[in-house]
Image (cartoon, rainbow, N blue to C red):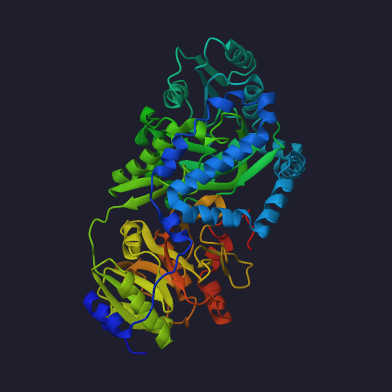
Length: 637
């Protein structure tokens, strides 16, 4: 098919007016409006919820249990109010349409049964049996000699810590299989809790590696943690909360990673357990390898975090102005200056959820939300990218960033396909729904050869946006939504989501697995546009290993640097190959879930056997090592 170029937006508009194609994106139930809204009233509504007065003052008592049905009613009323304030009656109708859906009700009943204490405890016990080291393994780890026998300072600020939690925490450090550590405890407990200091002093007498300091006053977690730093002397620092538990091999695995990769920042997977017993595991957080876009959207790194003292000296200590989100703030600063950020895909940290903890109810610490919003916005400003931060519509500690465009460069939109009617539909949809002025639009077929030829010889834009024929953009600002991420130095590919007419995902996150028949697989196939995804990542920009060319933007300069698409591919696979090559430059693939296109049909791409074979040959080592953005503990499908 010959390349057709529309030099100006006016030419494309004239084409659309002549063709008279209906390209309207129907949204009668307001799903897109509610999802894309930046309305801050959601945050304001949450601020007004209280959580300390009224019935909440009885938290943990028999009265609290008696009023459980009433609390459930109040909870649903408040959720409905927040949905209404964010999206109006249409969003509320969507909520209750799903609320009374028989399939969803059945799923909730099943989840309720599976989440009972007895079931959770049984599953948790089985999991712990699998991941806890045997006595033989512990002894082997204790006797391991590392070339870098670094000293790790474990920092724990204390404040009125329940004694049973305190003992669990200290014992989990004392029982580490790696023994070159010190536990630095800065105690800001008030005069009504002398037992905290008394208990610690008993431990100090038995183990000289425990360093304790009683603080004169409680200045908040940032200053209290800085007090821990003042009494520390280790080469590396680990952050630990006063009511949590370490896996016995946690520090061993961290030091092993330091020796293997010379890492100056290390983090692990973690799990959350409920209340007193470790067996009551309620959430497993299997994380990707370092994913900077994820980190801007949510503090996915969290626990266990370890970093070199040298790195901390460069990044700075904890800051009081980010109290409540101090960990997110310092992790953003540390990772921005780290030479090697390493991830250990093992659950080595157990986060206790209990009444009053942030993990239980972020509403108890509303200041933390404001601090988090400020932390991510400031971090991007410091990198040279001015951005405003917003709470997502699903979680107040998941952040959506809206970046200012440094400039408004020419964007070449390449529409590809072989069906004339589908091409016409997409061209008209761009004309009708594109607010960005500085564009040119080209049409070509979908083979690697023709696409490569089009970009190299015909595209004048600094950025290239690919759109599969037969699709229409949902957002009027879809070009800006792509550009605000693509303008960043570290990004190599920015993709959006492709939906079918039922607003379910066709293309979004792509993950690869060496044992998968088609090598690449959609992570959330057929999920609703409102599905949060794993750890809510469909509500913030995040990194993935590859992207479908059906809706993605690249930089032309990088395209030329890697010599474009590999023309040994036919009409599929060259986009995945391109992602491997771009990541080889040290660049990232970013998925912005807030930019979407919708197809008239529900056609899913599939890789040919020839393309799969070629991908396996070209990228054998990467495939063997596994997908860095899809944790090895997660299953496909």
